[in-house]
Image (cartoon, rainbow, N blue to C red; front, side, top):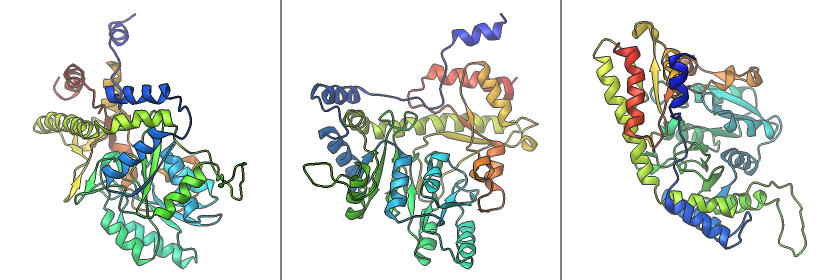
Length: 390
């Protein structure tokens, strides 16, 4: 067995974005179990929803078993059906796109813009105009705040309002991020959050749907509990879904909400450490680029992502970095592969100029956990030094 193999086995893995639980989460979890509320209802769920509403200054919220479920319910609430068009950005995770297909609708993919890496307002309007000319005005627009970075949400809303198209804001990765002081997820008709195990706070698996519209959230809660009507027996007049978050997992989420500001601070500190490191690297003739905050934007920095153009970095690519990190048991990964490049969606409409394709080609997400130690970061820097300093 070679030295590298031995070294790999001896060192703990540094994960991209591992869960970071706190004592409060454990305490509330134990309370949920000891109270015997092992069900998708209960006081922990009520308190978790109340805390989310208070934090986001969004008056109405329903906690669900995933962000994908939240997007699906949003589309159902907006009446999206077979043969409808729904616009979403192509640079995203597939969990935000599959629900469009669940409804029998067609996803229409819009490219990113270079500043935030999120939905391009320019290509959004071109897509709307083209769909309108085809006699099929989109039923919804789903912008995404990728890696915690706010999209150009004011411009997107301005366009959506001009054509009277509802906006479902995918804030799965951006809990705590703000645009001009307002929390992401609270701009659109509906907003979606994720509490998956790799997110900035977690309920193991989970999500939430928020809105200023009380009727929409009431309807979502009804549909998420199998559309059971108010009767002693089980009465159903509509098709519903089993989408509610359990009371037990809500206990974890309630505890995690107490440390959310600290987790954001820790993630931003990780970003700043990378920023400082690569600023020194760039002084030596390299050109590593970051996802930068624009005017009025505040990112939770859920993941730190970089762009590595080999033509500006002496032939070094993002894959060069990924493989070097992997040698030391350090996880990193490419940016999201654009949905219009995925085999399952290759026949769907796409509007853009290749920005998202460039991001995928050049991009890399670096380990960004809020529980990353100084020793972990020293290991990461040592691996990077083998590329940029040796």
